[in-house]
Every structure is written in structure tokens, then in C-alpha cells.
Length: 118
Image (cartoon, rainbow, N blue to C red; front, side, top):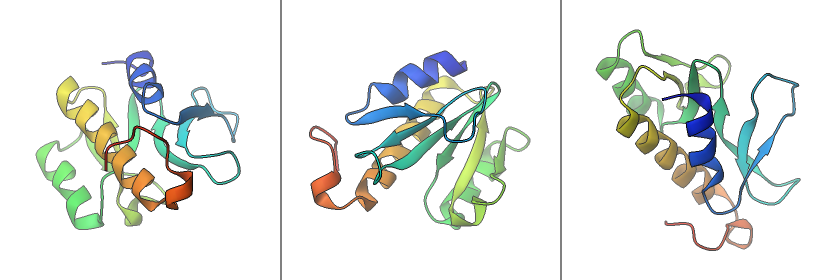
């Protein structure tokens, strides 16, 4: 897995778009209308940051992939993890899909994109 493949997977989601609010090497990927959008993936050269649910659910990733999954700085207590591209591809794509689902589910119904799966 690499950042370009994860980016393409993220941007294929309904309503997803890249943003670069902090001038990083790689963008974050948001869903929702500008001004109301929420991040569902933090792209990095070595991995991806995703919403994994409540902290207890997110901790399952840490247990399953020691050294390859870690709590994200600043927002980790809210259930966000950094996942290394060393984790099997199917699990990473599943994590991105779940992050998208969780984040879209927090948007007001009128801001949810057509075609997303609840």
C-alpha cells in the first residue's frame, strides 16, 4: 500500500475531496460541503490517520498491529489512529471505509453526500 493508492480510494468515496489546511506534504481528505466538511483521512507518506470509533474500538487496532498502529497525537482520545502501510491492504481499506462511514454519519443529513452507505 502507498499514499497514492489510499488517496485514490478516499477520493472515490461520494462527496470526498482533498484539502491542505496546514501545508503538509499530503492532504487530508474531507467529506461534506466546504465550511461544514469533516476530515475522515489524514494522508501521510508512511500511513493514514483514520477515525476508528470510540477509543476502546480504536485500541483493538493497537492490539492487532503493535508497532504498526498508534494513537494519533492530539485527537487520539477521540478514537483516531495512525495506521502504517505495513498493515495488510484489505485491512487498511476497510479502516478507511469505516472512518468515512463514521464521519459521514456525524454530518447533518442535508450535508451527507448522495450515494454514501449508512
